[in-house]
Each structure stands twice: as C-alpha cells, then as structure tokens.
Length: 291
Length: 285
Image (cartoon, rainbow over all chains, first blue to last red; front, side):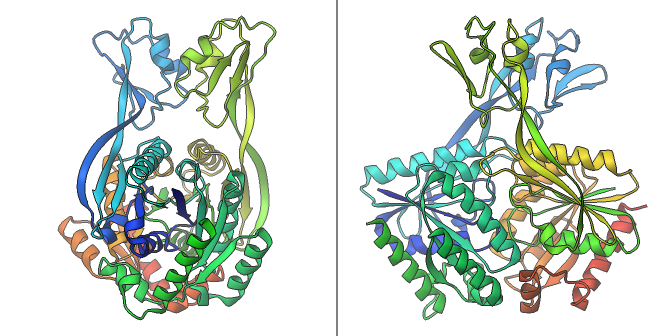
C-alpha cells in the first residue's frame, strides 16, 4: 500500500479539486482521506454516504469545582497560558486558552481542579459516490490537537486500505507548514505539491518543500493556473529541476475548474477539458514512480 | 482599533485584502499591518518596504542538568505532552512536543530542569512609505504557530498606541492559530469566494466568530464566479456583506506579480471605500 499526500503551503491552489480528481481516476484502487480537518471540503465533491462516526478525544481541559475552590490563586500564578481568569473574585478556566498541561491541578491545595478528556472533533468513515472508502473528520471550533486528529484519520484510512487490499491511500492535506501538515507527511510515500505561479505560490512552495525534505519523501509538482504568470512559472520549473522534484503537469487558468466545483463535480468528470488530460497524465506518472 | 482578516478556506484573498486595505487606509490614518499567518506569511511580498528592526523569537523549553538530578521521575509524570521521558539514567526532552507550561521545571525537587530558550522563528518590522508592517515567520519543522503569533501580537501592542489602526492578516482554518490571531480583535472581516468550498468554510469561520462572540462582516472575493448561495446565506442570517471584489483575470495577474490592486483597478478601490465607510460607521470612531 502506497500513501500519496497532496499539499501546497499556500491555500486555495487547487489541492482538494486535484485530490478528488485523482480519487476518481484511481477508481477501485484507493482509500481517500481528507486531512484538512479544520476546513474539510472534499466531501462536497465526493458526496459520501456515511457508514460510521466516532468522537475524537485528545488532550485534557482543566475544570474547577467551584464548591471546593478556596480562591487561593495558585492556579492563576502557575498558568502560562492565561487560561485562569478571575471573574467577580471567582477563579474560572477559559476553555479556549487552556492547553491541558495539568499544572494547575497539581498545585491546587484543595484538589478542586480536575482534568477532563477533551472532545476535539469527530471522524467519519464513509463511501464516496464512486463507492470508495472515504475517511474524513471535523475538528471542533478552535480546537487544539489538529495534528493528532490528522494522524487518526490517516491510521483509519491505512487500516481500511490494508483490510481491503487497496494499493493506494490518497490524502488531502491542509495549508501551511505547522502541526497538521507535519502529521499528514509522516509515513507518506509520495508528495504532490500543488502550486500556482504567483509570488506567494512560489514563496510558500519553497517553504513547504523544506519541510518535505526533512521527511525525505519523493515529490512531484502540479502548476495550476500555469499561464497566469509565465515568468514565475519558469522560476518554478527551475526550482523543481534544482530540487529534483518531478514536474507532473501544468494546468491552464480556466474557469472550468471553478465551474466543476460549483456543480459539485470533479474536473475529470467534465468531458474534453484540457485539465482532465493533464490531471490524468499526472496520475499515470505518480503510479509509474511508485511501482 | 484591531481588525483581523480571516477566512476559513485558504487562498480566498486574506492577504490581498489586508495589504490593499492597510495601504488604502494609511492614506488618512496611522496604520500597522501584521502578518500573523506565521506558517506561510505572504503580505510582505506585496509591499515595498525597508527593514526597521528584526529579532529572533524563542520558546522556553526545559534543559536537563544532571548534577543534582535524582532520577525521581516526577518530570515525566507531570508532563501531559510526553515531551520529557526518562530512559534508564538519562532525561530526554522533545522540544517539538513541549508546550512551555513550566510544570516539569518548577515541580522538579532538585531544580534540575531550568528553562532555556529555543528559537522558533523570526520577527521583522518594516516601514513602507506610509505605514508599518510586522511579519513573523515560523522556522520550518516547528509545529506550533500559536506561541509565535502571541509574541507577535505582544510586539505590536508594545510598539503602537491604541489609536493606531491595527490590521491582522490571519492564518487560514478554524483551529488554534486562528483563535489566537482573532481573539483580541475588535472586528473581524471574513473573506470568502462564492463557491461551495468557500461557503462551506466561511460557515465554519462564522460559527467560530460567533463562539468567540466577535463582531464580524463578510467580503466576497472573485465575485461573479460560482453561484449566489453565499448571498442567500448572509441574507437569511442577517450577516452584513461589506464588499465584493470582482472576478477578473487582470486581478489574478496583478496578484501573481505581487502588486497592489486598488491603484490600478477602479472597482477594487470602490470596494475598499465601501469597506472603510462600513468600518467608520460601525467601529472606527
């Protein structure tokens, strides 16, 4: 089983549309995982039917028992996250600020503080409208630990792939270079970098590739909206060459891309689009590299 | 006055709006723009500016001092992040897992874990011809954006008085980095695009802002593409739409080159005027 992760650094370059297209092209060979857990969109294109859902607990949250609290202020003194607030002389926990370190509970002289397991979201196993296993999740509002939820989604996807003898797990990652991205890269066999020829697209590509290099994962790149700025497009090609990243394909700036999404379809379901050809070619190249 | 620009979905135009709005407002007011998307900061690519000040930013992590350590195991017991473990007669610290809560250090009976600095990123303060610009960048491999965002906000608060308009270019998503970037703001502008992805993610962002009890409004980018579901949603939920930036290839081309838009595309200037007049009548006194 080979795991392919699609990331971009910069948001909005077309990761999800491209990952969903790969899923369609892969047909029965794939388990799909949406690891952009705080703004997941792939379900919009793949319209899954849910099979099961489970709450995800990770980390803890301090809770003060008001009756046992003597308002001594020790918790306030030790908290480095400004999560203990004093409102009308009563100590309370700001749930959004608490990072669940448990320090306050350890120093409370009356054992008034307990650490409760924190529900940070939900993960789902479903079937896409192409009858493929699909694992996705939704992080609770403002929740921490998105990296752990990403790891959970990937683990469930891998288990499902192994159980059903699926050769590929396709992972849609999140933007940035922080904990959810680090978590989505761990254990991957191939990374697809989706970029666009803009000053920010190139800047973010370079940063995210620095991270990929730390994991020593082979990478390929799709340049979306390739004709919007030819100078930067050639700078990107230069960068790919220097770093030995496979250039998978160029996609033209084409509103069909957005129109397909507006109709809740993947681009490869739109007949005779040039984009369809380029994405199919990319998918064939990836399979060739992995096998 | 603190105005945060956020979105839910990435790539909907946060940086475009932040840089153009900051530049436009700076014609009449004192403005500081801060790029809080520390994982992938882009605002600086759109501004002509000179470096005024730079400093490394650190997080605090425990450093083991084995002289007095009795290997009692308390440090590993108190760490909820598994960032410190005892292997036979050695204490190992995993800095990327550490949240800098200080529990192991301060609860150590022999003071064998003093806290020390570890670099997590860099802050840079630039000056354009009309306003100040602050950017922080997370080191690659560092996973936690929140502490760097927090320190960047502290820098802005310490260096600019309350009558300066502070604009925050926030990270995408709805998880902890966005909360950190928006929780102290007086007003949030959520920028989205009129597509199913844009709508799905802006609803998540709206729910987040409601949870934070924030005053917010919507700006639609690439207006004209997609469908009008976002208009219906805002209408049904009484959410103000205070600007509509049109969908034009010319805008995408200017953006790709790192250029500001409002001095070249009159429709963008009109929209900025609309946004500022809303801000003036609602929050800027």
